[in-house]
Amino acid sequence: MSRSLKKGPYVDERLMAKVERNQRTGKREPIKTWSRDCTIVPEFVGTTFLIHNGKSFLRLYVTEDMVGHKLGEFSPTRIFKGHSGGKAKAAAK
Image: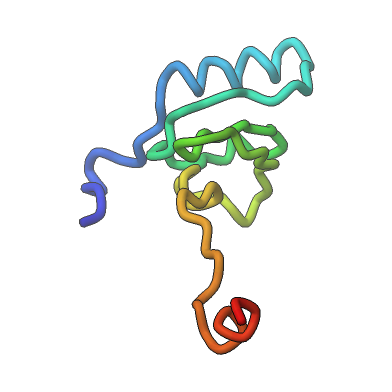
């Protein structure tokens, strides 16, 4: 279910403050965050984030095409290791 248009997009206030601080000071270091549900707004464009996926932090550089999506969409939480088809059976023999 999507968020109400009346409320607007969800943006973590502390994360927004960190982005604004980085832009004011001109720092280019990545911002570490656990807020995967935060919506990417135009102010985030050009910023690098380290997004937690449950195990490690994945680096994400925000571009204009990402505006409107969530941070968690670009940090997968599951790793697909392949199906155990004929190759796995042949390798076991």
